[in-house]
Image 1 (cartoon, one colour):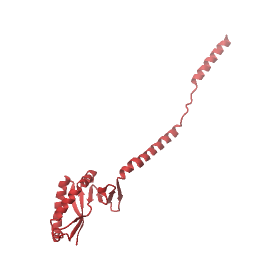
Image 2: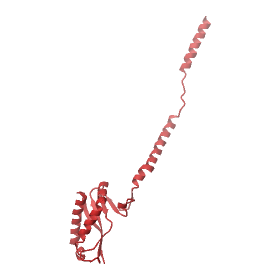
Image 3: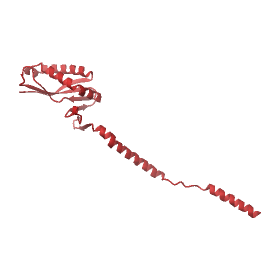
Image 4: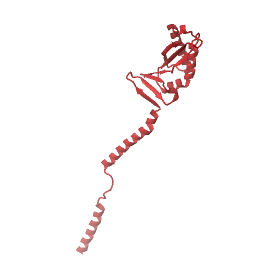
Length: 191
């Protein structure tokens, strides 16, 4: 009887030992899992940068000069060969050259000018609004300049008056109060 009792106790011990055994889970080591997660995140970030963000930024390629001026050239035809200066919170957009025959020239004398429009906000809204209305602004400039004779266009007073008129008319066309100044980038008469 003692023998059968010992056998029963041994069977119970064996069955409880089997239940108490720890089951080893097969899987990755936590450090290896962490490294894979980190490298995967970096790879995903690089893929996003190369295939999503870079094409968005390439629409407007900018290069910085030593004078803290940004020249912006785009594949967009409106910005082709255009100079745009960023200075702190301001943006200066320079028109492509405008050629105008003065009032008395009979087509023999030409005023060539490029005009910089300084805005007190450098947002893309201002840039887009300017580019969408540039033809009307150029037409207004041509109309204003063609009112003067060659000799009048050389007068400093007329230049100041033109700046005021162009600024007023351009602000009306653009419907903005952010136009802070107008500059003659080029201004010369040729025969």
